[in-house]
Structures are given as structure tokens and as C-alpha cells.
Length: 418
Ligand SMILES: Cc1ncc(COP(=O)(O)O)c(C=O)c1O
Image (cartoon, rainbow, N blue to C red; front, side, top):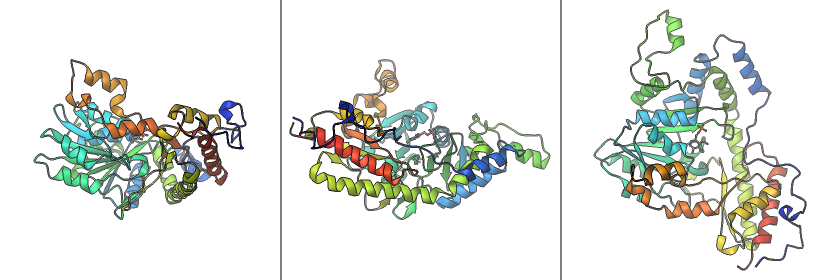
């Protein structure tokens, strides 16, 4: 039974006025004149790609994170592929990862012909649960690929401990596409795992259009990554031009995954704003959490994201979970009602093993894999309840207020005895 539509406002989905006249997206880049100017300067220079801006961006990025090496890639996905290659994943190997992620995290294992094995997530953070990972480790495990879901660092020390106590070399790869600037036990993510991956897609904390980075303290891995993103060639065009050498050798099978100087100039300019962007995201998260904590008295049907004591999240997303038992409709209706209010909510994520490609490939007779018969109850249950609220550093005070208003309006209507 629905509670009476609060003395209140008729929902936009029922023909009432929306909270806002135009859609507020769930994520969006912020670019200013200095970003545009930085790109224009490169466009007028000699090097559009593989020039001086690449090294400069990598160095400044590494310095921000306090890590020895940063190797840029053309996207976060390409960076993940590079990390899977550098970890030595090959056919016959396994990598344990989370189902609660964007599919690129698991796909990089398949690119290498290896097998992604899923382990369920912890109910509070929706990050890989180390106890579940421990149960999935076999002599074939070559890597654990954790994701810092929504910007909250995974249980990195526990996962590292698991990786380092295997008989075979097993690397911890951290997909930090959501967590640039996040801190784990007092350290910024980027220098904790064996390799850490970042994405510079426009909805992230800084953008280069498309772009990605792998950071590592390991010189050997950094060298493999540099070659892999450049066809497997052991020197770069600019080095050869400067030294007057024409000779180069291809020493491994790589790809063209290079990030351009145009993109790196944008990245350098965006890096200047990263601290402010992070601060604003943390402020927005605090405003949401404070508002929804109050609302819990009247609106007990939402759960705000958990934050463990030993982390400072970077808040790429702000995913709430619905207590479906307390509302008269499913997540789909709440989602549609919020969209009708012009709040650009989203859902992160469809668990990876539920995508048709994974089902068809690994549940079929031909490629049958035991682990795909399993279910991942925490991830699957969370998926039914999740709604990501708008979260980007350019949000105004009015934007934040509109989100809170719309959630109150919609949830008050749907919450009730059921
Ligand atoms: C967790 C995660 N991993 C990897 C990626 C892929 O990054 P990109 O879009 O830069 O290829 C994304 C993209 O959003 C992501 O959210």
C-alpha cells in the first residue's frame, strides 16, 4: 500500500511538475579556459602524440600519487589490458575479480586468453571480499583484480596478503578507475597494489577525453607496460628523433595504446584542479549523507554508502541501496520516477557474470566453467537495489538540493506498508 502522496507534490511520473526543468546528469566533466588553452598550445606545436606532454603528465601524475612509475594508455580499458599482459596472464591462467564492476575489469583477463573467476563482494562496501577470494584461489591463479567500487578502496592489505602467500607468483592489480585520490590506511591508492589502473573518461575525477594510466613501483612491470602500449617496440619515436637513430626492435606483441600529447596536455591542466575536484565530491557526499541520515527517520527505505574507518573515498559514484521490503514498487519504478523529476540517476552495475556474453561463453557446453554455475548472492542482491545519484565535482548547491528534494518526494510516495 502506498503512503498518501505527501500533502505534497504530485510526482512528475504521474503528471506533476518535475523538481527541475532539465535533466541533471549523473556525471559530467568540468573544463575551463585554461584546459582549452593547454590543448590549443599542443595543437600549434610539433608533437601531437608521443611528444613531451606524455612524459610530463606521467611524471606529475606519479608525483601526485607518490609512486615511482606512471605509464599512460589510450583508455582505462587499454591500461587494464596492459596490466593483464604485464602480470603474465596467459591461456590456462586464472584471475580472481569482482562481479560488481564495469565489464572492462574482467574483459582484460579474456583478452589474454585467461579465465576470469568471480568472487563475491562484502555487503557493506560491495568491494571484493577477501574471504571469498581465498576460496577461489587455485594453483592457476596469477592475479587478483580488485575494484575500488564507487571510489571506496578495496581491502588492499588483506588482498595483497592473499596474493603474496601463494606458491606461484600472484599479483594484485587494483582497478582504481573510480578512486583517483582516495586514501587507504593513510596512503593514496596508486602505490599500494603491484599495479593500479586509472581511467580519465569524462565522468571521472579528471579527464583527457579518453585515457588511462597504470602506476607501479616495479621497474620491470613499468618497462613491459611501456612497450606493450607501443606495439612492443623498445624505444619511442621522439627518443629516436632526438638521438638521430632510426633503428628500433619489436620485442613483444603489443598494441597502439598510446595517449596523445593533446590528451596529456588536457590531463596536466586537469591535474591542477584534482585536489579541488576531490574536495567538492567529498563535500557533496557529506551533504547527501547528512540529508539522508535525517530522512531515515521518515524515509527508512534507503541505505547510504558505507565508509570504512581506514579509508577516505574519492566518491566517483554515490550509490544508494533501496530496502525493497519497505517500498511498494521495485527499483525500476523508483528509477523511472527520479528520471521523470529530471534527476539523471543510473545503475552501477549489472554483475559481470550476468551479461549475455559471459553467460553464453561460459555456461555453454563447449566452454563450460564450473564457477559460472555459482551465484554471487551479495552482488546479485545489491544489483536489484542500487541507484547511483548524480555525483560530479561541477554540481552546484542547487543541483545537490534538487537531488535531495527529488529523492524525498519520490521515496515518500512509494514507501509504505507493503
Ligand atoms: C571500474 C572500471 N574499470 C574500467 C573502466 C574502463 O575505463 P575506460 O572507459 O577509460 O576504458 C571503467 C570505466 O568507466 C570502470 O568504471
